[in-house]
Image (cartoon, rainbow, N blue to C red; front, top):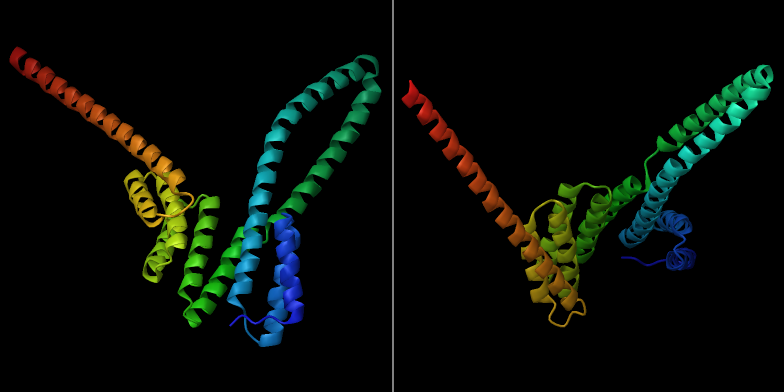
Length: 279
């Protein structure tokens, strides 16, 4: 049972405030400390606290992924421009100060290579450790054990959803489907309609990304049937229509391909028949 002390409560409040401000790293630090303090005070982990910590790690991981993607795109564009400018500058130097420029250039090249080597080493050292998603996955496994011990089915389902989110974010499509499906199975038994509907949406998205359109449509139909008073019902109906249209188009394309294949086979049969007659 989650019964925090004042010190833990303050850290949780700090973490929640950081999450609200999208200060993910600070939230990670606050929740991490809260988990440690709770464990020291109680001699055991709190599943609820671990989930808070994992959520902060996931958000921080998403932020870092976005930053890396942005920097990679910018470096590509800027690098080309800088190379062009450097070439022009170097050409100018060599025209007027050949001897000096060559010596200076050699020194600068050596220095630049040394700096690059140091940067690569530093990056390698940083990359050696587990990333936020990997840590979050480990934390969620510990949280799941706590919830299993206390037979807290809703929270177990919540852990599976978060694990599905991590798999989806890290392009592990099959694993994301498995996790969301586990959550759906539990929530069906628990009769938590809203949570089940939300999870079915994520399962449907995962199925769509993995090319399982028929299953994605089934998940959306189940979702809509649950959300009679759900605010997002209209949005989900639009998504169902889009999926159904895509499936219809794909089925038509498959039929066209079958017809083409059939014609090729018939053509080959006729060709071989003509050859036999000539003989």
